[in-house]
Length: 179
Image (cartoon, rainbow, N blue to C red):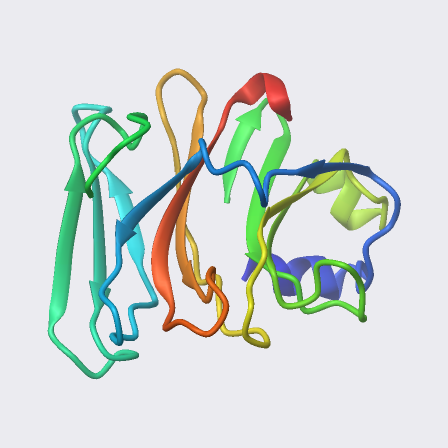
């Protein structure tokens, strides 16, 4: 819905906001679930009331299999974990698959930061964030999104993050000062 709002407001192509690349920063990426030969996708997440537990729910087999539940009791902050929000007053973080005109991030998992006014007035916003490279067309990014009590954003989705492999689910952390 947020991407549609951006497109409806005339933001059909990336303008020139500050570019933040996180695609190769593996220290922020936590594999939530991965099974060789198994298509894992379409995750949704929720931050539970304790402010530290993130529940991730997703189907096996491209929406045709059993529902899987994974959870993190450290808000996906640990480096070796097993398992559209506001970032400030009138500051939005919107994450989605880049479906704009051909460019370096087309088909990849990205985010946009800015204000509602930026959308309404067709301004480029504050930044665009390249979260991860998708290696198979545009088959990625129906992301879950949580803002932790300390302001850290945790966004989770599926994609073909490794060439020639089935998709798997990854969570990425972004600290508020980086935006």
